[in-house]
Each structure stands twice: as C-alpha cells, then as structure tokens.
Image 1 (cartoon, rainbow, N blue to C red):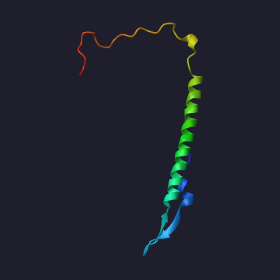
Image 2 (spheres, helix red, strand yellow):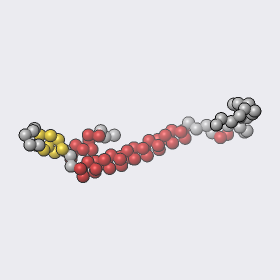
Image 3 (spheres, rainbow, N blue to C red):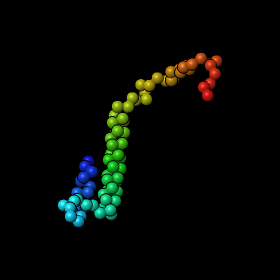
Length: 86
C-alpha cells in the first residue's frame, strides 16, 4: 500500500513567492488526479481484503451436517406484561 505522499511525489514542483524561499507546490489538476488514483487503489485493496476474508471464513465455516437439526428455543428477555417503552 502506498503512502499518501507517494501519490503526489511525481507532481510536486518548487515555486518561489516574491521575497521568499522555494516552496513545494502541487497543481490543482495534479492533486485531483492523485486523489482519484488513491481512491481507485483503496477500492482495489478493499476488494482484495473482502475476498481474503470470505476465503478465510469459508475455510473455518462449520459444515451444515454438524449443526443441530432444530434451532434452540429463544426466550424473551422481559416478561410479557410490561408496558412498551415510548
């Protein structure tokens, strides 16, 4: 994964403001391009991460044959006669 600086590294140039030293500058169009590239990379990394998580979950999933035939009975947490919260 790239650092945020790596997206802008090739687009930085130095400019001098009147009576000041050189300062790093990035053009607006280059900054927009770098941000869109970073978002595309983030989407790719998200896809790869989700794929790896699904693969990992499939490896450790409990086979259906070992699950109980009927689900456990669920009891209410509160008694039936209590008024509903507003």
